[in-house]
Image (tube, rainbow, N blue to C red; front, side, top):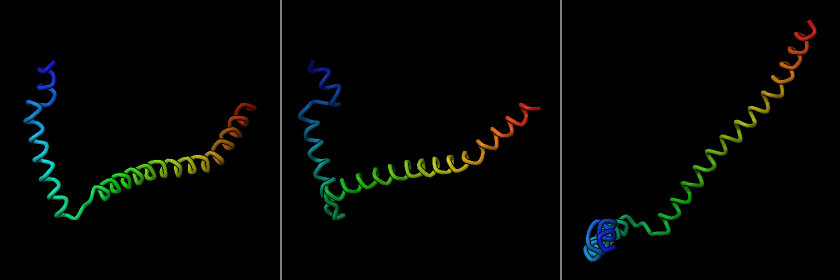
Length: 88
């Protein structure tokens, strides 16, 4: 079991903990220097997914509108042409 934990973590738990603490401090100093807060980062992530969602499905809604608009003309013309060809 200890071998699996060591393999999963990539080293002993204590050395991994020390590395994570040091990296977290360095990243914290960098983010503080940039005047970013955790709230700013979370807000950016949420805004990004909101933008992606509205872009994807906003385009989908426009495509459905265009499809319905075109189908309102194309389908009746197709049916009329089929009926006229069927009679001949």
